[in-house]
Amino acid sequence: MKTTRSVSQAAVTTVFALMMCAPVATAAPPAAPDAGSLAAAVRRDLGISVQEYQRRADLAQHLAAFAATEQLRSPGSVRGVRLDQQGRAMVAAVGAAAQAAARQAGFQLTDDPANPSNSAAPQGGRPNKQISAPQNIPTPADQIAGGDVYLSRTPPSSQAAKCSWAFNAIDTDGMPAALTAGHCNETVLDGEAIAPDQQTFQWQKDRVTGPATGSFEKSVVDGIRDYSIVRIAPAARKSFRNNLVRGPIGGPDIRITGVGIPVAGAPVCKSGATTGFTCGVITGVDQPDPQRPPIRFKHTALALPGDSGGALLSGTLAMGIISDGGIYSDPSQFPTDRPGVLPPAPPGSPITLGRILEQIGPQPFQQLGPLAGGVLPYVPQVAMIAQSVVDVLAQNPGLHLRTS
Image 1 (cartoon, rainbow, N blue to C red):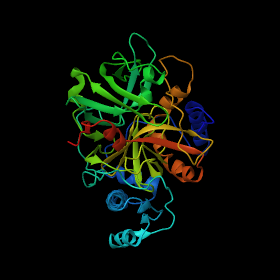
Image 2 (cartoon, helix red, strand yellow):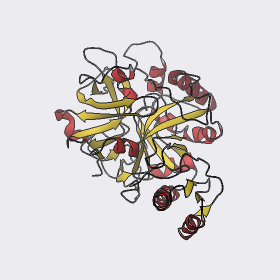
Image 3 (cartoon, rainbow, N blue to C red):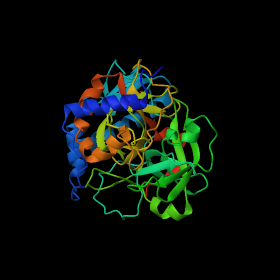
Image 4 (cartoon, helix red, strand yellow):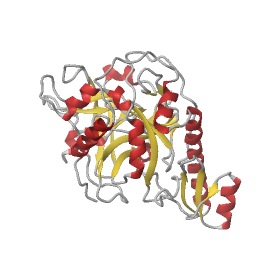
């Protein structure tokens, strides 16, 4: 499927459309810490309480586990699972045994799977931990967490891509690592082999790069999968030894407790450097092989350039990595174009999209979450795409996320 506009063009259109529909100011100083800010963000973007958000997130994982169990018992017996707009668990089951099992589990039967590709969770793909409510926990200032900004460049070049971290991890050699988007590695995005000198750097205001934090160990960006595994530099390892994702501005960080399976209708919240913390729902899942994990999913949590590589979670489960977004000619299919990156605007540069986004800051964008959530489900040509974390782990045996 061909994308009708590039990511940057679509981003420009989206940004200015949103600016026309809602007041946007320059970045304001962060608000004082507020334990209720997560609940406020969920209510703002999803119109539900944080308790209902947790219930739906947990219920989606029960649906995924049910589908996996039934598919093992009788392949093809579950055509789809989803949450409807009221947060009810819906199962499209074939055969009396599967239908009886769905009723016994308390799920409702439907003839419409809504998203046939979301036919089942992968084998062994059940949630590895129950979802628990995020807690207001103080975070040391030197910790780097999901949603934090970083720069990707190859020294001595001064060109850099601005991206966000997703989740902290431990790689197959037992070394500290982190997940982010594949297209944030511009060497691989240009079709070249991965190079050890393609590195990640801290973002420092008024400077292109701060200290180096890691190097790309693996990057995949092929129009379908889009992820990178970054091995953390020895001097920065202490900062990545946490399981945190940034919450709403002024609010608590969220501790990741496991990995979730994308399910249509499940609520998700996104943490990224450009637009901060916004929430939405999963609208479609790309799972061509029901015996394998979902590869990607579409969602309605607002994300713009600079959020690439950021974290998508449901409750306290890692769900996805921000990958792409734009206007697509065939909304019934997942896009197959390679995403692009938006370079940061260096100090003193003329007005660019990157500079505009930087000047606006994440706080105003967080307030636009309800607008995105109210429009995107009804405009299928515009889609936000995320890489499924469970697929990344399946592709890299031995890699696992930090949960403490």
